[in-house]
Image 1 (cartoon, rainbow, N blue to C red):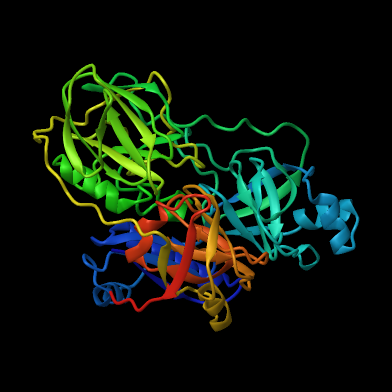
Image 2: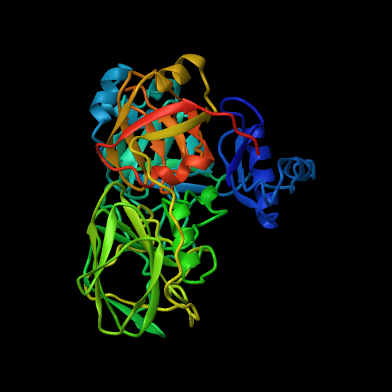
Length: 498
């Protein structure tokens, strides 16, 4: 179960409010209580995500009364060289009524404070931008912003560490990498640092290669990938307590089905297993295995015999398993007794694809067992039925507005795009908006000025500035991982109690 709590220490660009948010976040992260899933600070906001079964809200509120750590919130002064060649530079100058040279000078004038890291790993949210350059975000985000792009949005400026979607106005290119997962210290900047931009010429650093999480020589070789599927990922329970660095939660998009698959083979909850989306791989067993499938939209064929989700089975050495689309749904999970072997990065073996941590499987990969399993085949577990139409219960979000909430409830939507970051919906017109960037909840319904809602999933950015008038009830989050492009979605209001 999942719950969230927003703490607001002030409005706007308040350095004092930011110091308080950072100090409390660092206090909690130094010795996190069991059940705390994340503590993500922003400008004057701190978002706490927790499991109310392990950390009741009353106990969490008592913990918040403890005095925060002192001396948090002030750091170094860092100079960042910038080549001013951004795609929006001339348009920004025109909208501001300035010359290009004046825009460049104004952008370099302040000594910016780093208020937070988020959205993607290492993305620094800095302020304040000079008033003439406080341009609104684009009505709808670009699908891809180049790595190292320097951009502005309202009073904020930032640097895109890696290619990602984004709605900010692009002014230039940083000539240093603010994030590289291969460095001993991946993050160039931390909240509380001060940054000065300097115009320079030169080439930006190359994009980092993904950090490899799968061992090159597994201790207990178990599976060989003969053909890769559309998106096959080894995931565990997810990466917790890392949102303050901008890292994605990751983990299974349908945690219910992942739990069932692991349960069928006697693995603990969160043991590494394989998430398979839309069209699966062909895998050959390198040793006798007990395995299980759970999920929807795919079926296994073991040497031509169908293996339905919800039942553990014996997978003999040398036998090939093919995963093919069948029925409604988008993902299944393949668990093997003993779990899969993978290296953790900051606490999790799950990939963060936008953060260059891990990668999908490819032909020739060999997966190993994490340990010896003692399960027997033939165990069954009835899966929940997948509804004909997704009816998702909604709760108020941090920018709740009655008009917007009613618009979300007013009719049917269709999934226009679906990936691990989120679902983009088409349907009734929904009033959107933007503001100062703040933490984003899992399942949050984000509505940019374009009016096209985005439902945020496990690989979402940890911070965002578009309005979030609602969030999906945690009890329905598993359904979001099974929605496919073209699927119908309806929202209904929900009452939720921790």
